[in-house]
Length: 207
Ligand code: GAR
Image (cartoon, rainbow, N blue to C red):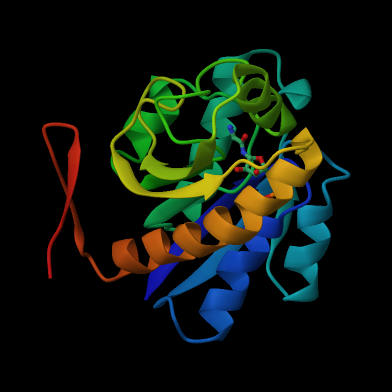
């Protein structure tokens, strides 16, 4: 069974969607650890409620970013994880981490990449930018993580309508409910069933 390691920073609703999908028997995998860079992330409470091991590993605990990344790599390698998922993880890691788990890291981003992504686009900021641009459709993207922010091969995307009068908070909630919590567990399921192949930076589904 696939061993999954999770990195989080916040509320953990995407983590919850994965936990629920595993509990419902939809994903042939097991979450072996949830690691947060923030000690007070509610995602850690969600993990504890499901008896999942948690850890707080922050760059503040290390003299360099390099050592912080080494600690994360060592932690997940020791747990033999076959997949690392970024479930609302707000730290941009370098190619060191990406290379340690090549094509084995999946991220969820709350826009239709390549719009509103990359450095500085995270959480509510993404929805603020979408509303400021006046786009009529936004959505979410699940992709493999490579050495840059939000540039890796796209696995799944789902579009969501932007409505008159939307605030960033209202739009964020709609994108989560209609897209993120749907495509994130689905992408993890496909990965666990070995149905995703990456060729020339493009993800192909094999059945
Ligand atoms: C989600 O909307 C996720 O897509 C986004 O942060 C939120 C975390 O919510 N991630 C990023 O912006 C990453 N660049 P959650 O903690 O409730 O899953």
